[in-house]
Length: 396
Image (tube, rainbow, N blue to C red; front, side, top):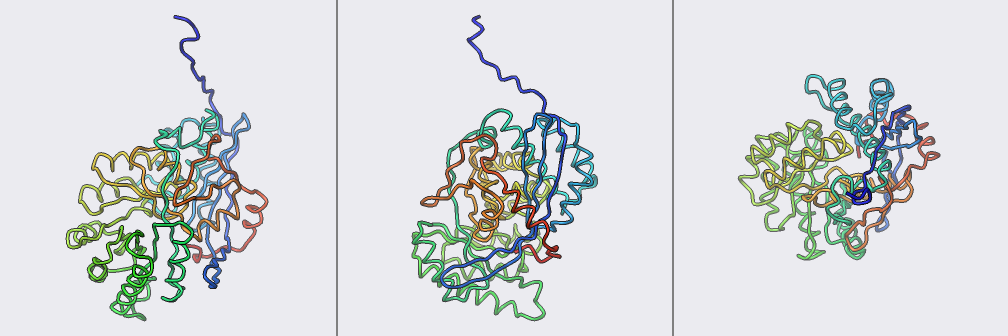
């Protein structure tokens, strides 16, 4: 056999020599149709460096930034320094035992996610390929939906914003409903909340017509009774999906809701353990599952979850924002789906990253450069890390 018949890539170990996380409280100013609103959003950047000088960057958000950064700097760093960054499975398994030995989730899954994303960034750079190609290279672009409709917009402003985003070429729109209804249920009547939400969604449908897909997200802020009532009210709207409709993503209530409505149900973006996705699938509780690489334990675990979804012939979609990390998962895998172009989350990313792609006609083209294909602006990261803690108020 001619020695040139086969070419082998000899991937040398990438020993980890440094791990550091920066907690950030980032003010995000949302401006659309003459309305301006500034909100604090929490995030955490994780840098991993190897002895060859390759740096990978991980990211997580919708969390307590100081807690996650502390877990990375004080628990994860001493656990992984000296390990081979290419060995993502081995490191993920070790961190799972260190941080979640009895099935806990919460902040641990965020911390593992940030570290895992950085390792995959290193692995792809070491191999000289974009991360999405390393994951499987199923497609070079991904469709996006735009999350635009927030509770601080009046119904009139919401309609104007919907028209604006459609005029920009967006044919898939998501809006929030329920607005912390369960948290404030002693001050706000839930019946009034869902009636107002139904009116707002119907007004958007009337404004944009039937050719635009509309999705809604309750962020786990309705009880089963009012989630069902809202779903029934909105069946004529032909929603794309109803995301996280019930409190705590209760699998039994989600399953019952799915059986009683024609509206497609989606959930999973805030889950940290793979068995929770198994339960959603086995109990036929959702039409769409939504693992998020920045929350659900990184690429290592999300690939496993996507495999479960494929076995159940269930769609996956990015929920929970952070499109520039999640686009790699959905471009890499054959059963990848929509990516969420969450307007405030994108504005946050634009403040701390450079080289981010911009969607055209509802599609994001994946980067061709090795790794994630974009880089942190470390001056901005350092500046935002000096801000006072969001103290629980940075989840959007």
